Image 1 (cartoon, helix red, strand yellow):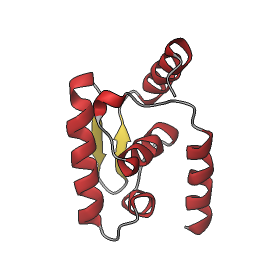
Image 2: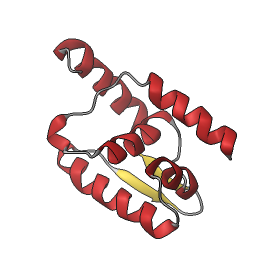
Image 3: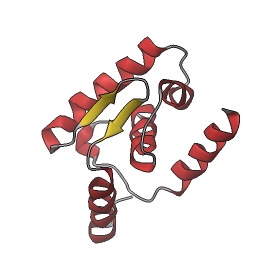
Length: 107
């Protein structure tokens, strides 16, 4: 698990896609969203580790808040039984956010 967390932190550090300020993400929510952008699934354990919380309930609260903030943008995050959460259309959103960063010069 520790190796997986380190790998995810590396991916997050390399993520160039800046997230829209209008989403109003906290630093923790942005990190969790980047986990979803970078991976097929965000598990309870990984979400908890990134958020610095323990337990499934705390991870669910973070995911609820993130879903609420991105839903107006047409972004869907689904719960996958036994795995965690998945960003629907992940590759599309990765490209969209990366293009937004490049064309708008967002930091």
